[in-house]
Image (cartoon, rainbow, N blue to C red; front, top):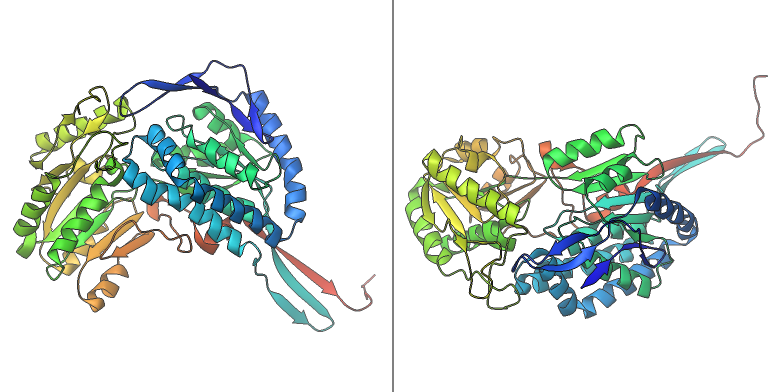
Length: 483
């Protein structure tokens, strides 16, 4: 059985601490031992990163970008192998990993590698003087990842940080510790100088140490709301910059003029992709009363054909949930939904596929007859559970969609261009999708509003988030002081 260690200076480095188990979600079997990073080791990681960052920041953006572009190509060429590691980490279906999560990682490296040379500033003229602004790197930055999209999250955070001239320390979730090493190997092979990308392992102890360490200039978290609040508190004494991409309970509004087949397909994808373990998923599906019965019947029919099972089988649609603990949480929410009076229209059970009886599988589940005050409607379940609600008019739909402290994603289905613009402008969300869902190109920002967080992944906004503005004023004349 393999044992994985802290990755620093371009190589693994043991800490001597007791390893923890990494289990394959599809079987429950232990497939690796992961050695946590010690606090003393973290000091060494940060010191090496700070030293390496000086020379990296002194390079031109073009030179930094070339390294990221080479790394992107390496990962693209290894998509199938990397996807298999991702499946072992997460338990998601390999067809999904190969086409979605894993390619989105090198896409980010490619995008930020391409724009690393273009860090725009401003130029100003004054009588006898000039001024200009520059975007300068922060120094050593850290990313704390969630377990649902480990390849994507690692690259979405590391790519803009490195492109801007920072060093980057990545702490993957202890549930998904494996795939980060594949990214580290690709960056090292691409020529990234040693010390610029490090991996630290462990639970909240090492996460807290990153937040409190004075040598870390920024922490970017993808995780839950409660974790985000802790990150802010733990980072407060050092006043480090923080980016938070947190949870969601996103609305998907299906208007009466929507293409019904498209609306059903989008609703299924927005709920059951990655076994529902997606923070922006459209789990509150609001359907206009005039089409609600037809919509629900088609959702139930198509849900019945979704194949759940061996994540390595390319004919399987939905794989396993991340852990037994999380599976039990999802099953508990299904029982809560029934107790609250919602109608269980599809699914609702644990699945034990042949050969994977001990895996953490749950049927894609659809509740109808839901009301806005139900816990299954208001609370993030993070599993394959859809809540269908009915509305009568546009204003009502928008009002109810916005009635949540989350604000990560939102979607609407309509064939009216005017309605699409009108409703999208009113939805309180960091991202809005029209006639599709969860599409996140690397040049378009992604992030939340309200308690879904702040700051952005992807796009130039992310690049700005890993820099600060420095202004310079130059007097072109002899100085004439008052003293």
